[in-house]
Image 1 (cartoon, rainbow, N blue to C red):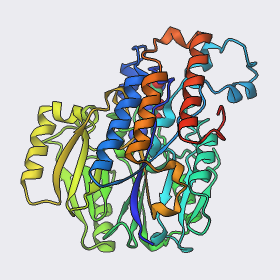
Image 2 (cartoon, rainbow, N blue to C red; image 1 turned 180 degrees about the horizontal axis):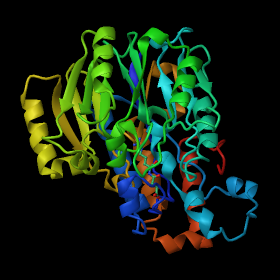
Image 3 (cartoon, rainbow, N blue to C red; image 1 turned 180 degrees about the vertical axis):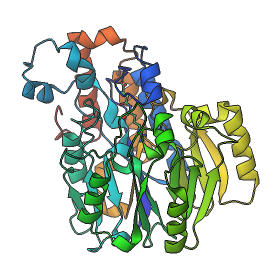
Image 4 (cartoon, rainbow, N blue to C red; image 1 turned 120 degrees about the horizontal axis):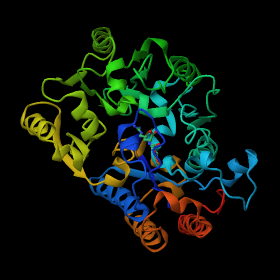
Length: 420
Ligand code: SUG
């Protein structure tokens, strides 16, 4: 059994659009009403996966969900052929399942009492356009990780407590396949914005995953970070193996947190970015921390960053110094995920990390070059080129996006999913 990190990216669905649905997510709010480019968005995502494969990283993917979500609308009393009420149309059409970091919280096998990798699907209850994702996410995870000798897939935490999955969870370990420290980050207050991760949800997940309480930390996000637009912790911090890369203002009581971390993992390296170098506003607009921090097969670590980070002078100046120094992060790689970024989703939002032996995962969810070629071909042929807000009411567009996704399900042999 060889455990390694596999990044599962959410393929951007054909209904990708800018509906301004996420208060506290500045990009989503600012781009409300813009014309989206679903084909370009999805191809940008495929290119990111392709680049990661070429780095020698293990790559998987999840399917976009059935949108508009007619079964959900049906349960809300909107008949199959009926016009969708304005109050529901954005949520019904949202392609937000692309942000796989919000699909689930994952505790790899070395951390759990039963030696299995545990996944708990996120309820995403705070934003109503995301609160209906978990049903199809659960189906896909139960397929991808159906091998019960190696995986346990839990249904979501009751909606009493908000849970947004891996975006608020970090794991630090000497190596991916060694026992680690799991850090659950939650919100208490966020100025004018809703807090999306509740500590009670995090505690429940830690119990359900049978984590060792002595190896588990619960850390509050700072209110200023949430107020500046860090609606998830992964907008201001990212961890990989023994490295934590974080903004100075990410956490409420960082002194306690860093002390605990150093006690539990003496080899930890904390790379903190001072606010005097990169302000919270620059961190949020550039998504510096929404990078994938990965260990390359050669041993060093690289940050896979959005182009927006290179374009920001304060951030790119900092990054140049970072890789020139003697720290653990040796390389920066920039990717164009602008369509996703315009809704507040950077490279790290688009992926869910699972430490597992790829041979134990359903191969339909594992990427290789040939499969990515076939997926890209389907997207280039069938995904709409653009969607303006008014188009969402068009029955012809509805038929087009349903057809496009069905074609993708055929290409990937996943027609058992809804709408297939
Ligand atoms: O939940 N945006 C997503 C972005 C999620 C980013 N994920 C992580 N940080 N891990 C959100 O706010 C915008 C959709 C719209 O407005 O049309 C949206 O849902």
